[in-house]
Length: 481
Image 1: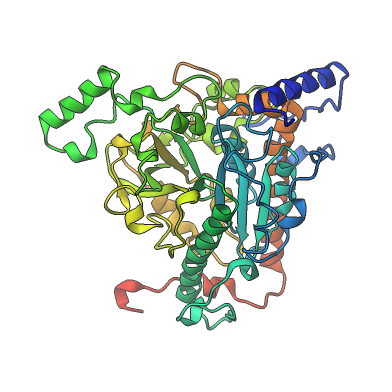
Image 2 (image 1 turned 90 degrees about the vertical axis):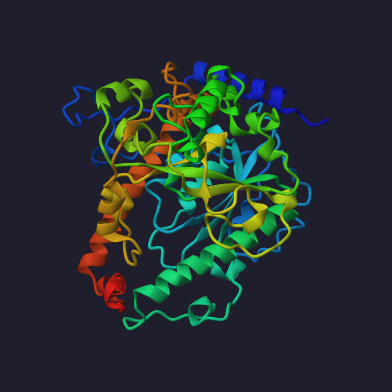
């Protein structure tokens, strides 16, 4: 008889307690003085050799499927899977999430993204598409997350590519110093669409359900009401409309007032409660959310450090460190989640409104005030924003992203509520144990930073077949070039 999630969770906690009593692999805390806070915290300068690897679960979970394979070849292997995800790893949540993630040299921010969504969704099935121009390999990080029950598959272009009509849409596409910035950028956009289509189809064949389509610098969060956010975007200059909306919030009848603020509340639990009718609309399996930017403005780090505890360094976590975001009253470009059990195999239009009229709303811009969730986009420090080799964005785009006005402080992503000092990281530590939590997040990020520093140094000093500065030079559209 299979063990249900509740029993498995009890056994997991009991096992963790026994191991704790026995003194199993107690992790030494790396000490150093950073930023003059008067607190000793881990740093990338003093990581040492105590990086912890964990044994994978038994039996091994689809590990052989991680290597490059076609999108259709694993259907038989996953035929026994269901929308509930990997047995015994949902920690009491009614079902688990899947995600499709494209990645290019994002190893520094990948550990936090994985840990956060493992906790908040909960994310248990992930397909990762690695850009062929990546100079770093995400698989060592992904291996660690498989050890806590995530089922992860890694694809390269051979796994999912479908030729299009344009030269940059062909599988065989040779980049030279004469190629130019624009064809490489357009190829990335095309790759994104064909990857999402193959990924959604694969997860559909596996009988998964809700699947998140966001980037590694984006985080899904509850759309808690902010008393300073102003009238909804559809109520501009309409006093009665704005008053009606505020009354629905005050009276507790609006869906945003029914979001669970308890420690450990998940997106799956909210959807399962059927409070939000957008998730049960048979004609709209694609639900869109507004995306709001968090700029690279430092917060009160002494206060934030108290929330993460002495084991962690708050500067290594974007969701802790950066809390100044753009206003919620404006419409913003959307990101989405899709119930892949209802995906019909259609082409992907773009990353913002992937299924066209099968998505909620009328275009790629979303009215935030009618949503249960929103997406938080962290610009981060330039060290995490930069890309070695080909960079479709660059320092000017980084500065433009950070040039935002009318910023407000948001405390609802790291915390479960403004009044609750516990954070998502606190709950992740509860789920996997302190030793694993430190290694899976902070230590993984430190290793990735050191690796990136090395790659950038070698790229700057060594002989290169391609002139990246030339490829990164964007055309001046004002001059028609």
